[in-house]
Amino acid sequence: MEILNQTLELKSLEDDGSFEGIAAAYGNIDSQGDRIEPGTFKSAEGERIPLLFAHKTDQPLGFATVTETPQGLMVKGRLLLDTVAGAEGYSRMKAGILKALSVGFKLPKDGYSIRAGVRVISSAVLKEISLVIFPANPLAAVTALKHEEQEASPLASLLKWM
Image (cartoon, rainbow, N blue to C red):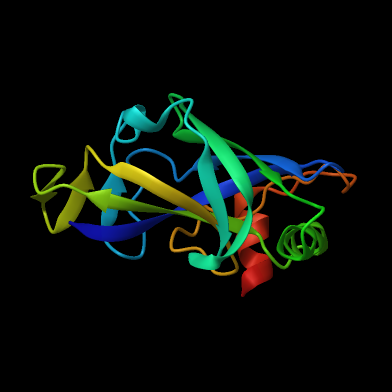
């Protein structure tokens, strides 16, 4: 099995380090040529998933839980602010440096198909969720932080990266 990464979108950040995000929209093709189908991560619902910085297992930031929604994979995470890594992650998220999330997962041989050159993922085992700087999916930009006065559209957030 290979470990793959798929980007998630950060939705909000609270003063206690909790946040929400949503997976790249179902049906959306990322820069790696992958498209995730609804239900791909249904086996992870309700599980406590490690939250890392840039997929580095030596930098745990906290934990997250996931729920499948019609839009994608909803993530509710919490940074552990009493740790150096968690506090740094929170500071970087609040400053807008960390604007995206990415999930690491194992893909079974029968968990995908190739359609018109796109790997369509239908079943995977979620291993971790990471805060990242550069998302694979252009729609995975921050759309709202509660400490900001107004929400930015995904397109406006993307343009800030350029």
